[in-house]
Length: 429
Ligand code: NAP
Ligand code: ZN
Image (cartoon, rainbow, N blue to C red):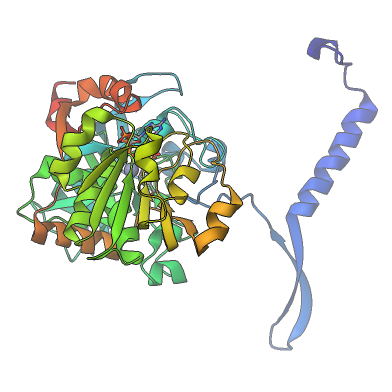
């Protein structure tokens, strides 16, 4: 292959050919459509221009930086907010300033008080999900947000300045599709994630909760029960709903034996919910030092998953397993633990595919499924349930300046059991 600088100079013929090619390309972007109209009802041919489209926020959507006009072009009123961002997949998070939009009619602006650190933040910052959701840099992660309302738009009816509220993984959806109507906004084709998704207001991508303020459409703002500690309630906005929703959907209840795999942020919430729903909860952990904590959190039994004999004792006996592991692991070992029609729900999202032995599903009619966060109705239901039952996450509160250290500990499974960033620490930046 010739070296790039050995490329021949463009001949006149070549530039003519490329002109023709460009015309064809332009013509192909314009689709002929037959229209019937006018008083005479005559049929005529019109050309409609097709523009490249990114399905905003959908899984697998790649953000084309230039497909969206940037905020300078759009001249929307903005203000500066403090934040922490990563500039590349290998960079540490560092202090920065970002633009936030001034609240529009339907918006709620809040001062962020606490933001949990989800393992998804880590996957996204390191671009570990590049095949499904490539990361656009700089990225400001954070989707477990608790804040105090500072301003509301004229059409906002449910919130007022001073209210304590929450924001989870989504900030927008179309509100008209059947997914939205059914309360599954996370599957709306026009859903916008809280970070790393096309920002329809300012262009570029959305910026998450590692920041001192955020502006969000009222529909995606949740009411926080007043009795809950704010730092410990923040993780409910992702870890809480991601575990509560499938356990409710698949009917986890008294008399059932329920397994929780991976005692991290999600896993420890699943233990608390399993206990609250009256199930017999078995924790499967790779960390022997978490055994006592697991029992304190509400588990009835703890199994060290690397011990084959301990695992064998539970074969064929579980009704439901929630797998919240963030890294590659053998799910066959857990499928074998399910009884007839037992359900293993994956919520953990390891970057690489997991292998499944067909016979582990064929025998006993076992079901392997997955679950994505939760829609707005089930998120509010979960928050209210937590308020009534006094359920929050076990958190280690950190200043934002310790976020990189926290990430290092997250990958070593050394979190008890969620980091919650105290955003007051951003004031000194
Ligand atoms: P986390 O706090 O880091 O917990 C993950 C746990 O997985 C660890 O504490 C550890 O538990 C276990 N683990 C880690 N590496 C392992 C390995 N190599 N083999 C076996 N077990 C291992 O993470 P998280 O925030 O709970 O998130 C868990 C996963 O859920 C992540 O992949 C995240 O992206 C995903 N997630 C999905 C959704 C969704 O909508 N489906 C929402 C939020 C998060 P032990 O020490 O007990 O073994
Ligand atoms: Zn999350």
